[in-house]
Image 1 (cartoon, rainbow, N blue to C red):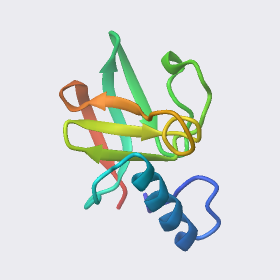
Image 2 (tube, one colour):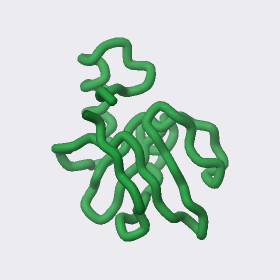
Image 3 (spheres, rainbow, N blue to C red):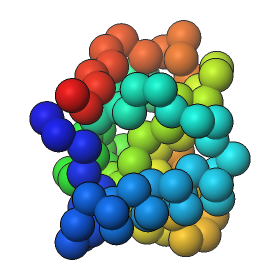
Length: 103
C-alpha cells in the first residue's frame, strides 16, 4: 500500500498533514510508516488501519489518520485523538502482535 493520509488531496498535502500530526504528538522521525496495527487492549484484540474507523472498544467511529512508532508505544491518531486535540490512543509495544508498514 502506498502512503496516504485520509482526506489529503495530494501527496504533498499528505506529507504536510502527517508532519503536523507527528509534531503535535511529539513523534520522532519515522523511517517506516505504519499502515496497520494489531494489539491487545483490555483483554480484546484491536485492529486499526489508516483510513478505517477505530475498533468499537474506543467508543467512537473516527477514522485513523496516522500511526506513529514512538519507542515503547505506538500512537494511533484520529481527528480528535491526537491530530487536533486530546491525546492519541496508545498501543503499548509489548501488547502489539502485528505491524504492517506502507510500501
